[in-house]
Amino acid sequence: MAKAVNAMNKQRRDDDSHRLFPFLEKEYGIYVQKSTLIKPYVSIIETDRGKWVLKKYRTFLEASRQQVFFRLLNNSGFQAAPAIEGVISFENEYWMLQTYISSSRPFHYADEKDRYDSLSLLYMYHAYSQPLLHHPFFATMLPHYSLYEKWHQRYEQFLYALPVLKQLMKDEELSFILYCARSFFERFPHFFSSFIAEKKTIIHGDVASHNFLRTEKAVYLIDYDLIAVAPPAIDYLQYASRVLPYVQWSFAYLERQPLLQPLVTKPWFLTALLFPADLMRECRVIVQRGKPFSLPYFEHRKQFVQKIMNMIR
Image (cartoon, rainbow, N blue to C red; front, side, top):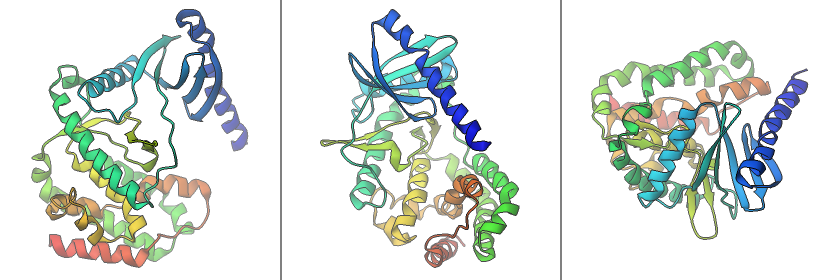
């Protein structure tokens, strides 16, 4: 039954974009020759004018915010983002056309060069996005990232899934994860003022490896749907959470990165590193799969947490 529903939903998403194609041809003279769905509401379309990415947004505000942000970012000199061709309104839906970037190989945090290049590109992106905070359009159009509240919501979802997770994970690992989460919630309020005092920028908000593309000549950062006002360190926290499993939870690895060195001395940042963001993010997937799950490099991770606890005491 579930497979049938998923198939119907996929077909519905396909139909959403296909209904748009005759409109593109009639109103814009764009003939779509081929369409490939790459994720919900995002397709690669091959047309008589070239290859584009077609993406659907729920509201005009979301689509226009993306369009304005992309154009301002490109105009500021940041060349590592796709260009926006335009936003199309069709039957109370909003579709954005952006240039298609062909990657030369998959980008992955297991690769040392990819880890280095993604961190460098994030730093460059923050330098270009920070001045855009002063643009009148973004004064009221951008959300402010609430770290504590967002993570507390994920923690509540994790607790809801806990009965199922107990059947899939070892008690020792679950107890450790709960200890890490509770340690964050207990300690972070003590450092909240220093977190608030951090200089703000427009963060990317989703620095997963699949949002970086490597071409023959450059690396690009894509998918800016979660942009928000926050300290750049929020993106670096996400980066650390995603990279650490590939470096065996080595705190020394973070210390060796010049861009992270100022952060790993700050108590609020260290406390945030305690939070098991990776598992909170994936707990729904673990439950859906219904297969036994074990934390990679569990002993290394325990040492990582113990080192941080010693540093913030």
